[in-house]
Image (tube, rainbow, N blue to C red; front, side, top):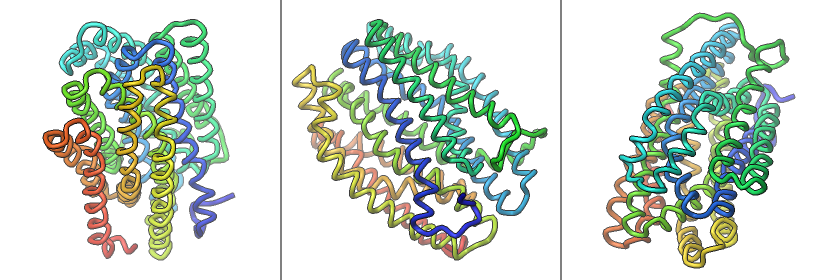
Length: 441
């Protein structure tokens, strides 16, 4: 069994992070399933509605990533300092606070969903479908948040494989119920939303049951008190992931506005396919970062500077190789994947395949930035991590998607993500260079 305190060579590092990689990929795949079934069995207008309202739902749910990554960094550092009981108390407090936040956000989201969708430009059938899908999803939001959170915390608890197993169970639930509700029963958006809700219950409740009893992991629920300082530190550590997810959702809304202007509803549908497929590709980078973060946090807490330097060097090399493979896969699979979603519409298929051929270049750069942001989170440097995420997912993308279409029209929108990722890589490498003496990596 691999321990956080071990020396990590390439083989051990890949073995430890592999369950997290598969877990994130599987989460992305079953997230794509809704889009596949809705597009092929309900039509492109309901499909556009799912893509239209999803960024707003993601803004509410990404609180789970903040608590998960920020809490994981603090808990791993505490374990590295030899304070196991304190780590369990922090873990317990963070989970219960996140659950309460989920309940509050679900209530607020249910009330504001309609006005916000209308404000974003939806009208007619698109507005009705967006509200319908969102209001069925929202009651399960607390468990959606917990599912995101536990995906990070299982690695910190030394149980990445168990986290993978629960994610697979949730994913299979969603896939099977989508096939039954949408394809077999023809329930359309209602069926897709119901399948997603039930899968989120599986992903959120099973970890609660596991950590609520005695187990052989590093963490379990214990009596705890509210620690405002630790909670603030957790939120600070996880601010980059929160910022990244909120920014991505806001930028998606802006992309939808630009696409509506340059290509209409077909543009939104094509962008939806890009986002669904890119989620799977990006999940490899995110999964590695999530899996490696507890190791980085532990050795930072234990002041093992040599191991910290080794981890960064190995991670950069692995992510670099993966980036090349992701780009090659994107170029080779763009047309087949587009055909899978929108093969029923020749014009939309051509637009989507063309967009994917351009978009795939972003995979060459995004992995380094995701790793860099996560690395600083693991070092409990939430500010630097948040700055990288803020610039990558908000500033650079907004500037690019507003400016490039003025010169290249629709293609300018597809090129925007590439320019934004290149700028983000430069910023990430600069931060890694400047901070190397402070953290001794």
